[in-house]
Length: 471
Image 1 (cartoon, rainbow, N blue to C red):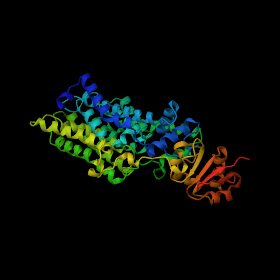
Image 2: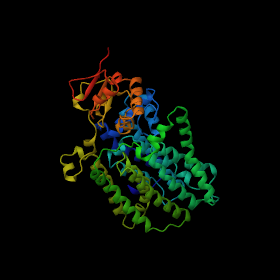
Image 3: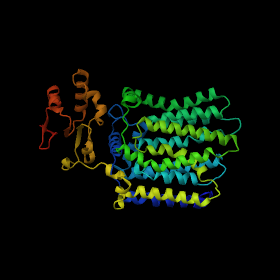
Image 4: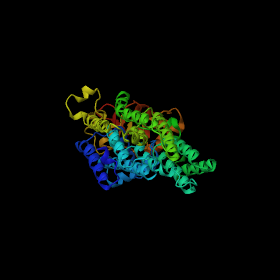
């Protein structure tokens, strides 16, 4: 198998596509439950497509470009869960083939082929976390496409357009998932080791990085959403990044296979001497890339959906050293088969009896969201949920800006302040929901503070659920 994928022919591309689709599609066809991150993305896309503006008409910290993408997908079809899965698979394929193309084009390793893409997609299939669309997966695509712009095209070094483009792509990635801004460090390191005039080149890179943010900030300034953009997206303490919902122990166990492959690849690469200075510098850059990827994952304590994708580019690069020629070639073939079998076993462990208990790794699907049975009869209505449990939104629509309860504490957490009460009255009056689901027991107090707004909501037979009575 290794010898086959070391060739650079169209047949290898077709074989890789068939292998990856055969590995990933059956589980997608069987169905995966909606995750907390996907539900939030569906709600954000639905609200934006319905005319709401981010950070002004919506209390949510989803990065602006990711939110716009969700709105575009919702314009194609309402609540497009299947489209999210197809788009996520397309992004994974685009990242793998783009990285493989760059590694081959710039001769960063003596051997060419599709082994980097093969490793990228095999290891990326270990967890179903990368089968779902997330802001991190979306933004990471721009990071992968920025690799080629960080490399000089001639002995004279960079040209201005490439450096600006590199910073621009990293800035666009940060507009999908803010912690990806840390990859500016990789760009600055690449400038130092590759560029002749590193100071001027660094300024060009930084100008490219801040340019998309300047455009977005200008747009939000004119629509009156700039304070919300700063509060919900830029301030680290208020950045709303939904976790994957997986226990920390399970996430660590899912990283065992990628971690082992990465360690073996690093050990093999550090013991390999490279002849070209460019190849040595590129290896140094990928070591920094790996460190920045770990730091980016640590921002959310490794709990962000799709966090494994951060390790895939350096893992795919260093795997080229792992799969390079060896006197006992059968050992490498056996290792690749073990990685393939590990991906299959981990991915489909929920469909093999007693395999989850044997591995002590429950399937990720067991931590997906299911509709709350207490509100099964509540369908097709507008709703305000006051609390952390969003499952009632499965068959209903949010009507007010208060989508994220943690961020909504900017108003509901300051009911003793006149300005906060006025803001609640204005936002509730603009689009009063049919129902209010009170999980924090605040409706009685709100009825006293705002009788004209909340006085029309009367208790139903379901605890905590209030229905608006139309006179």
